[in-house]
Length: 335
Image (tube, rainbow, N blue to C red; front, side, top):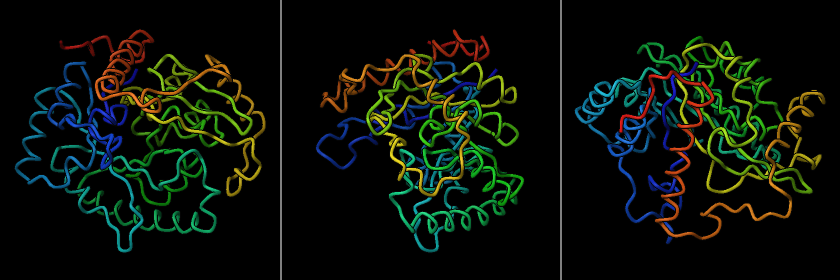
């Protein structure tokens, strides 16, 4: 079983990320303290914190956040990513990770989404080279401070590629498996879990329903346990006791255009049988081709509808995860 908690990215509008800086920005976003309290009320075993909340905090404020989380009995995890700027380091992220008492810093390495690395052209290799160099340096610094790094399959990299990155960077570098994202790179989620199991240090519990298109398929968010991701088989492949954050998908559907041969440019070979298995899983609870599958964000809903939609999916996800037996019965809501 998993030690299930919460991360903020399934609440992107509620916390003020979705629409940030635009006319559709949330006028009253949830604070970090409110997010931690929400996780606690749901009986979360872990709570994942966005680096933008933490980067400017003083040492004293970081320590206070650590104390709040520890008092609640939760494990803190921090989240950041590479900006691909010259001279980039993870010094700031390592500082706040240590400051809030988190032993793990989750990272994604490139800005690519929807598996669309071919759009980057020659820049794709530049992104990889930069990520490799920053990760190696940060891994040495993290090891000296007793911290671990974990790189995510952020709709950009396959399990084989992530394993190579982690192996090259050091023993304290693992992988975060997002359970829905293998579909975005033409990989079967159970095969991903099996290949990467010994290096997986944290899990993002994400589910999708698929709507097929002439170019491929759209991945549409849903509550965890109500889509096509085979959670029982994934969990069986993983080590016992891993932390896992509930994270419904983005408010904008991801269009994976892998029926276009050009989409595959730059990918390592993928066995046809595995691709067939993944495509078969996407048929489960698929959305009819002619159905309007717009999320409330895509449909232009107001703030009240958007925050309600996100909260409802979080609550349903916690319920479903417990019903599926993925988490300990002790992780009950504290409301």
